[in-house]
Image 1 (cartoon, rainbow, N blue to C red):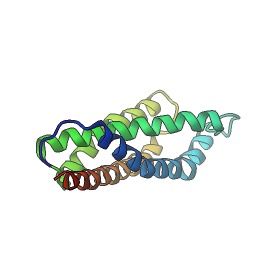
Image 2: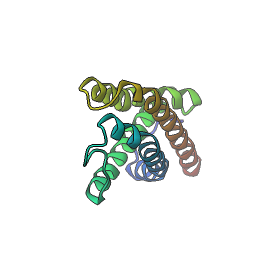
Image 3: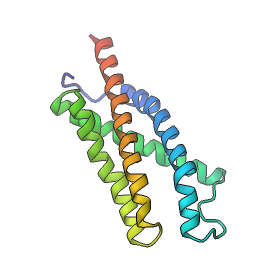
Image 4: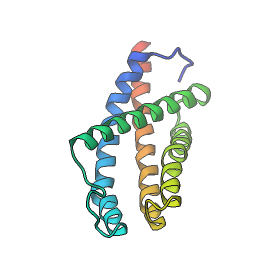
Length: 148
């Protein structure tokens, strides 16, 4: 990737397309793997891990912020080290530590989730961010070639 000025239009488009994957991955992980374990951990208490339209909307905002920061981290990393598979993995790893490891270790440390849940959520979230960075990489390459 050639060193370029930050293009908000391209960034927005890459974020929107990458967010499709993030939303799918987050919804799958949460509904299939996290909800049953959280409900079990809290002895199936009412209003624990419930989903309604307000929460779903907040969750959508969270996914967009996650996607934007992930794509921006990839863009920064690729500006310095090039748009390579190594950049995909390293920027995904950085984003994963910052977003998911910090969140899940904090949640488990405060007693909001079971420590054993980290064995499920952390590897899947790393996979999610590697794929998201790969998508961003391919989209940025496509935009780079279109500009030439």
